[in-house]
Image (cartoon, rainbow, N blue to C red; front, top):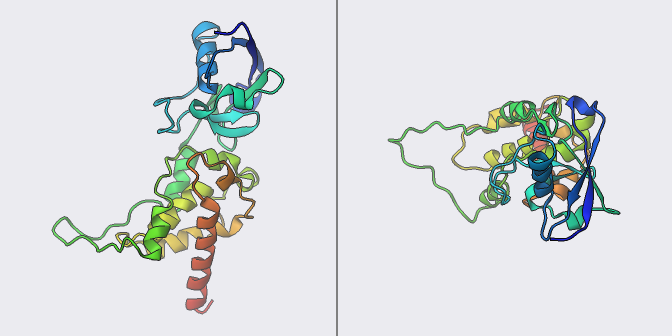
Length: 240
């Protein structure tokens, strides 16, 4: 244990309207941002609200803004983000703040549904399983996005979401692309219709923040580009 400490600013309150609070947190070896938040809640302010579950980068529920960047706090070491002995921690942007560092995830998941990001099955348990060619380009495209754990880091990073509430966002569109390429999914027409609307894939400006900040190294930007291509093809097949 070191005698040093970190100056931690917590940006708390609905919509960030509360005055940020500053805490001195003892520095420890291998300390994560989540460790720092937990120390504040356990030793200084028991009213501080935040989310976490697994602490090992599997659930994504501990995602917060750290120095203005969305991150999994359980996998972010303070030594990597502290600047001049200080670090600022806040709730994920682009989502309503419930309390302190806790955001309302409902708008994010509502957009998954709006993007038809749910499996569209037509077969029963008595039907044969749809054949899947593991080496096909479609299967490779589907596999590339299946590790998304709905943490909303990409959604918080997206400037298009920040300026357009109707935009479906990177993770819902990545999910739509995954299902569009899944041989077991029968909802191709519904997916293409959902993602080509006013809040769909064509709103993306390809700035790439979603891909740059994804903790699982996924590539939503490329998935969105794929949706743009497929919706355009579908449009011209219909004759405009």
